[in-house]
Amino acid sequence: MLDHLVATVIPAALDHGVGYFVPKHGLEIEGEVQHEISVEALRSLLADHPDKIAESSRSKAAHAIKAIETGTLRVHVVDGRVFDGLLNEIFSNEGVGSLVYGNDYQQIRKATRRDVRLLYNLTRNAVRREELINRTQQAIEKNIDQFFVFEVDEALIACVTLIFYADQPETAEVGSLYVLPFYHNRGIGKKMVDFACLQAKERGAKKIIALSTQSFGFFSNVCGFEESTKEILPEARLKLYEENGRNARVLVKNIA
Image (cartoon, rainbow, N blue to C red; front, side, top):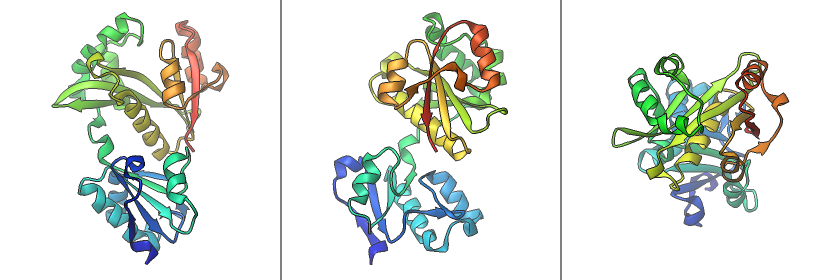
C-alpha cells in the first residue's frame, strides 16, 4: 500500500504541494531517478515516449500530473522506506526523491517576437541605472529565444535570459534579470532564476553562472549562488566580459 499513500503532513513546508510515498527512490526516467521535471515535460514523455519511463514509475507519473492539473503546485515523489525522506526532500538542496513542478511557474513563458518592444520598454529604466547592459530592439529580437517573461494580466512585469555556450555545453548563464519595482519583494525575481535553473538542468547543464554589478547579494543570499572567478567563464563569454569593462562579479551554482 506504500505507493498509494499521499502525504498531507506539514502543509506549510510543502507550500501547496503534496508528498507521494513510493517504494522507489523517485521517478525513474531513462534508467535514472529524475530529481526535477516540469509537468509539461513529464506529460509529453508519458504520452509520446512512455517506454522512457520505468514501468513501475508510470502510474506515479500519471498521478503527479493529475494532482498538478487539479491545482497542486508541485508533487514530491519520495521513497517511503527512507526515514524522514519527505523532510529531506523538501529542506535539503539536492532532495532525495523527484519533484514534479507545474503551476508555481504558470505565469512564466518563453518570449516571442511580439514581446520585443515590450521587453525593450520594460528594461529601459534598468539600463539607465546601469543595472542591465544596453540592448537595442534589434538585439533583443535577434536573441528572443533566450528570454523568458513573467506575465500578469497580459502585461510583462519581469524578464530573465538563459544562454548556452557551444564551447562549454554543460554551462548555462542566467542574465538580464529585471522585475518592475511595483512587484519587488514578492519572490518573483527568485522564481525567475529558479525557473531558469530548472530549464537549464532539463537541457543538460550542470552548472549555471551569473554576472552581476549590483545584485550580488540577491544571487548569493537568495538564490544560492557562490562567488567565483572569471576563469570559469566559457571562452566566448570571457572575451565579452573582458571587452565590456564592467568588472562584474562572477557567481556560479551547481545544478547537476
